[in-house]
Length: 213
Length: 213
DNA sequence: CACCAATTTTGCAATGCCTCCAAAATTTCA
DNA sequence: TGAAATTTTGGAGGCATTGCAAAATTGGTG
Image (cartoon, rainbow over all chains, first blue to last red):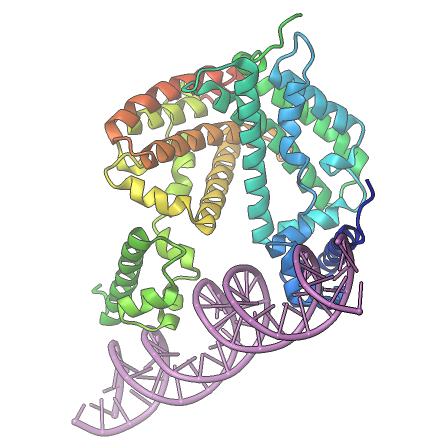
């Protein structure tokens, strides 16, 4: 089923606005660039920008749909005999070892993080994102373990796993902003992951182990 | 040395604005009430409000000076033979057992939390507060342990202890908003603290034990 | 008391995010 | 081609926040 001209143009317009906005933000910072600037550069009206993006932050932090499910997906996909925490640590190690851009291990990520760093609204947005990640993780843990409704454990475990993930991401961001190169940071974060695993309690590391069959 | 008339009036004006603002926010919510409303109710100009409070959020979240040091203070004051985490858990248990208003265990705290709950800027402010608490804790841990500059452990331990604290505070807030009464919540959170302690790793629970002498 | 200096309060203008609403332009389809 | 649906646009306005300079208040001095 072919996609209509209308849909295509909408998608293109949206993408163009997002790209131009991102470019401007990377160049001049988030606070400096106004929505009017973006609109003018994209050759649309200010209202059209608001047609596609509810807030200014959405212009910069667009592709976050897959990251909100990341931890939940990793947990649901854990191996037989593997716990939720172990699965997340394993996936984290794989990404870090592969110097994956998904975690920010890429050339130019420092510029991106710097923009976020000195724009409070963007940092605030990342916090709510982290919250969503953790909520989804908690929901996944509840489903996977069939925990009772009043059981606080899934929330607590989600908090611990979320902390580990958040710590890794934050460290990568900090080091990249500091000007380090991705491979260096990768090596360092692998060591950090070992430290993190050593800190986690047995209960955490053995929660929601996937049974046989 | 007596305090001049000028200083006294300043302090009084500031307090009056803060009180009136808090009252209005509790009554009508944070988003609904404008700064102009506050100014009019306090019988000052809008600019005078900004003279005392940098942002609207500061009108509601004023007295936060002591809370940013809380965890660091608790750690610095830990007993001989007691670890940092143990000290924080002990202090938390004492506050919860005493149904202390400092953690939100008081009649009327639900209204306060409800205002925060549905005002994104206020929640955002609380996140930065939590960050400050944790940074101060990390600094305290570094001082107390004399950890090397590059050692990631103080930061990680601060993260774990901060998580425990944050979890307790968040739970209290959630339950109070749900309409539960303080004593009930106190009992529940004591159980939660046991769960939390069971989840923490040995390394965390034994970090920065205060030596003899 | 009268006056000067420091401090505080206030008014005014402006910027920027964001919302609402209705008119104009564009695209789809019969 | 023409009506219907959709998108774009313009304009007005609310609100937080900032900057600036005038006006009011206060403290101390002669």
